[in-house]
Image (cartoon, rainbow, N blue to C red; front, side):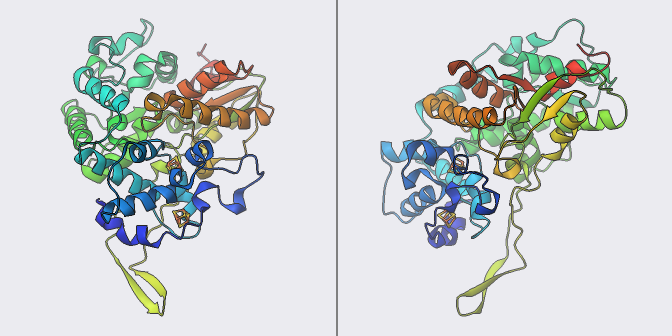
Length: 423
Ligand code: SF4
Ligand code: SF4
């Protein structure tokens, strides 16, 4: 898409600020009412979804030009999509999409992304991962006890963070698949980044090349089904790839797969884990994983200042993300006491790491993670559970900095502790 296509939307933003908070109907306390980590941290309207739409509109109409401050504001946003689901309660605008398009413009104009982003994009191009780790070390997490079937059409797409930074998640996933007798292949050192870190800072051109390379590789290997550990990989493969390149691979997140395996009795959670836990919905597994439907209808004036969309416009409200699968798995684990945080499902609060914020704005990323950990601790839970290695990295950093007694588990780690044949 282009900023042109959002012109009417940008013109229509009424500066109501609803995109800063979860919808009133879902607010449980003032303390945990924010949905936008950016406005909460920087505390000036420009740092909200609506504020960034005003900025994009002013740029689009030629009223302002790039400045270093403007670029910072543009990139001090985790692309978490919270503003969009909040706005949709009232106006159905897409600030997150507009922010993305302005980032695309920043790159086309040669001013974006930020230096930290340029550095990791170079690393993705050179080493196939944003961490700059050697290509041949990608499968180093694999231990001798794991059985991989090179001919399986089910691929475990490990992702850069699980492969190089959160190896324990890759291991627990592979072990669970072995316990359940679910055959899977991996791409090993041939696996390349899903493109999320590149795409999210607006480098669509390079991201589309990565998408093409990945799809070609999956086809070459005869892959039909792809399992992901990472919310970012899941979002890219499931939601963003089809916006540019059609594919018919089945994309499944580990939380969904565990649900299937538990239902079929191939995973049997028999070991009691006496633990009180809470669950964090990763934005890119939740609201951002809802398919994006490009709308090509038109706005028709029915009465004076009363408009309808013809044909009716689909509303992407985030409700169709992956929320039930992890919760259903958690509820089947004996001994676990599960308590929800205040901001859940499509109104989850971002961990703060996404869209290049962890690398370019680490203080902001840590603030958001701390905010989420505050909320998790307020439930009285002893463990914080989630389903994304990148969320784990950022929230563990927060737990460490504040010396919290709370522990963090990826859901696969918890399930492995509970099932017959697991740890
Ligand atoms: S983006 Fe939507 S919610 Fe935010 S200020 Fe504009 S109209 Fe209000
Ligand atoms: S995408 Fe998230 S961080 Fe960015 S403006 Fe919207 S709510 Fe705030």
